[in-house]
Length: 241
Ligand SMILES: NC(=O)C1=CN([C@@H]2O[C@H](COP(=O)(O)OP(=O)(O)OC[C@H]3O[C@@H](n4cnc5c(N)ncnc54)[C@H](O)[C@@H]3O)[C@@H](O)[C@H]2O)C=CC1
Ligand SMILES: O=C(O)C1=N[C@H](C(=O)O)C[C@H](O)C1
Image (cartoon, rainbow, N blue to C red; front, side):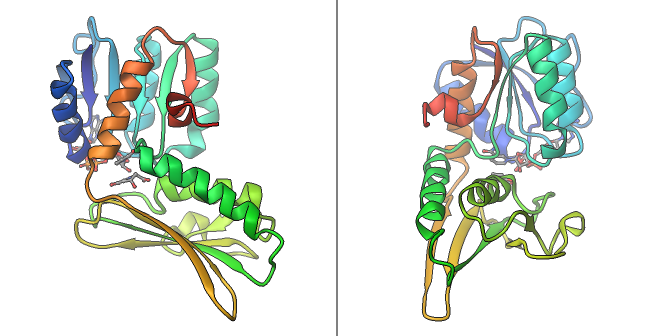
């Protein structure tokens, strides 16, 4: 495949290594100073966006307009999802988006759902979540944490929304699931869900040791989306129900 990278930071560089190792060609790198252009995307098979929450929606709209299959890893655009899905559905677009492209986290998503169902009848336990990332991360809470919270809330009735002390837009008001966003030097991504009672605590944790899992999942998704139309997630790529 011929690939354009949108965003050439920590993830863009990791993805480039995996693309080359799998025999693909990086024909363009869109950056803040050299943004996506019609010239850059000529003859491209897919674009892979790991940019910033502030730039991703413009990048998505550009790629849909130019009918380029896109792999969107950038987080922080949940509020724009419905408009993006409408454009993909009505303009015959093709996209795989995921808050987390790693196989391990997508298995962790299933574990989270199953634990929430198991714990539902045991009202003495109260769930809460913690995510830890590197100090350069721009959004809080992480997209992965939002995905985990959304799935937990659909399978456990104690709360009907979440809040994050580190996000002024999602402050605590009423009875909500807490997502604590912690920033520590060079942490690649650790997510913990805990159910706490007066007697004991039950926790599950996923810890990323490096960025390879995220990058490999994004590249596999770029290979998978070829000749497909519609909007998909990593669950579709992995055929996880
Ligand atoms: N879905 C997943 O599996 C994962 C998602 N992410 C997400 O990916 C995003 C990027 O993460 P990192 O690579 O660690 O960040 P980074 O800060 O290392 O790289 C982002 C790059 O995008 C560039 N950029 C800014 N505006 C741009 C524009 N208009 N067009 C193109 N590039 C632009 C920045 O200059 C920077 O070099 C974040 O939103 C992060 O949450 C990160 C890891 C895994
Ligand atoms: O910014 C990161 O690094 C990561 N961001 C993603 C998220 O917001 O969930 C995925 C992963 O946790 C790493």
